[in-house]
Length: 128
Figure 1 (cartoon, helix red, strand yellow):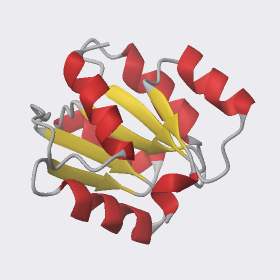
Figure 2 (cartoon, one colour):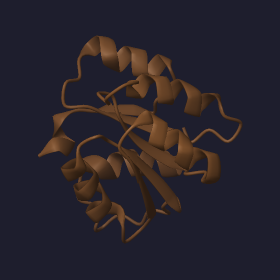
Figure 3 (cartoon, helix red, strand yellow):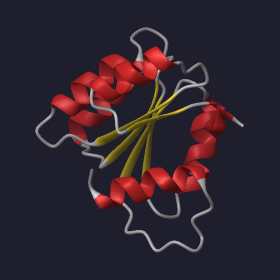
């Protein structure tokens, strides 16, 4: 795992004010909940160009013209679920690091996401 991905993942769960981390330039947040996208945009906007999508279809459209280094991807999206986009994203020649986020995670989902190429799965901590 690239060092900046490990540091990024670590920073999702702790206060990173005292950690010097070289951040990726572009982050794509894919979540159907506007409040979740807003919160993540507020958290990361100072360090990243934050792109947002509320569905797999909209995320695909963004990925046709942008190449984010990291995708924060909700599992429970309307229409196609996040696992579909995860599998497409990691198959790309310039595959971004994908971190799945979900309010309803379980062990089966975590194993499936990791086997499909996700760098991690974050549960309800991001929802509060």
